[in-house]
Structure formats: C-alpha cells, structure tokens
Length: 218
Ligand code: NAI
Image 1 (cartoon, helix red, strand yellow):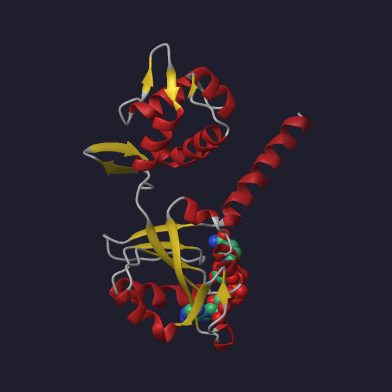
Image 2 (image 1 turned 30 degrees about the vertical axis):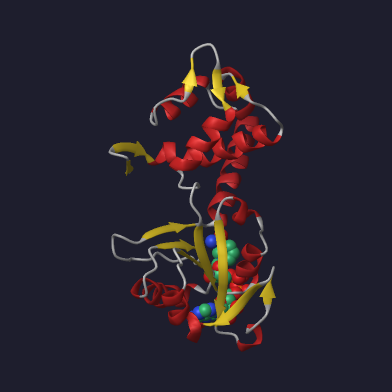
C-alpha cells in the first residue's frame, strides 16, 4: 500500500520508519548533537546506511556529501512530513483504564497532540480531571465537536460499542480515528483510521522468541 505525499508516492514501509528517525533525531538534538554522518546514524539506529539514504531520498535527501546530516534540519523536515509542525486537537472516547493511561501521557503535547477532553457513559467519571483535562458524558459529545476544532478521536471503549460510536464521530465531522478497540471499522474513504493493537506487538515478540529457540535446538 502506498500513500500520496506532495505528488510522490511514498511506501507505507518508509512512512512507518519515519517516527523512529524523528524520535532518534530528537534525542540527538536534546544531547546537543548538531550533525551526524550517515554511517554514525546507521550504527546508532541499527539500520543500514543505504536504507537511511533510500528512505530520506524519498523526500529529497537532506544529506550533504562529506558533511552528513544536519540534525536540526532533518528533525524539522521529518517533523513536517509527519505533520508534526502543526497542532492536532484530539479527544478520547472511553475514560477507563486505557483511556486514562493515554490521557496521563504528557508527551503527546510535546509532539503537538493536544488532548481537549475525554468522554464516557459512566456517570461516576463525570467531571473528574486527568492532568486538568475533564471527563465529560457522551451526551455532551456532539455539541463539543461542533464547538471545538477536534481533528482526532481515540477510541478506547469496548469493541461492541466501537462501530456505533465511530459513526457518531464521523457524522459530526471527525476525520481521523485512533482505534484501540479490537474491531475493524468500515468508514467513509476520507476518514483515516489508525488501529493500534498492543497484542500484535506482543505476538511479534513471541514469534521472535520461538524463532530463537528453534535456532538453538538445531
Ligand atoms: P475499561 O473497561 O477500563 O474502559 C472502557 C471505558 O469505556 C469505560 O469507562 C466505559 O464506561 C466506557 N464506555 C463503554 N461504552 C461506552 C460508550 N458507548 N461511549 C463512551 N464510553 C463508553 O477498559 P480498558 O481496559 O480501558 O479497554 C478499553 C478498550 O481498549 C477495550 O475495547 C479493550 O479491549 C481495548 N484495549 C486495546 C488495547 C490495544 O492494544 N489495542 C490494549 C488494551 C485495551
């Protein structure tokens, strides 16, 4: 699958590696590193230098022969590609364990994701605040969406409710859903859905453990 970006087709695989480059370059910036050779970047990131060059060539390169990469410039350009040069307001639907854990994670703000509210159906949660951000009841959702510039909704509700709630969100202007409920959402084409399943990552880990054990047995 490919995504279109500024008239170029960039593969999903490349896009999926960009957050890691961005995170890593951010750490270099924090450590005061101004420039890095592609060789050093490759060693530190455990990615081949040619992979890094190929990935970044999709966006015009950014490297200079004999100089390497200017960390600040590369960080800011990758940030632009990832849309992190703008802020994105978001809400969380489902203020249970996972919803509250996400709300407690302050680093989203550092990347420009601004949590505006959480919503739930449980009256015991009404009015509580997480890092100063209020939990509202679902009957306030539609008004809230119409009066606030909300781009993204995270779904951390039971899967049996996800389809119904996603429909309400879309009908009221939400164009991007960060879906944690373990169900597929079939929504209009202009709505972007990014599903996250921590268990997929755990199964990947389990696969790698099994592979290692198989190699040892041989
Ligand atoms: P939880 O039971 O602690 O929280 C769910 C919350 O959703 C509750 O506060 C409940 O009142 C609320 N809720 C129920 N129906 C609602 C509706 N129609 N509208 C708004 N709020 C509603 O559950 P937990 O552990 O936070 O998990 C939430 C969801 O995330 C579950 O579907 C779970 O399977 C999923 N999950 C996904 C993970 C992933 O990696 N994708 C990891 C952990 C959980």
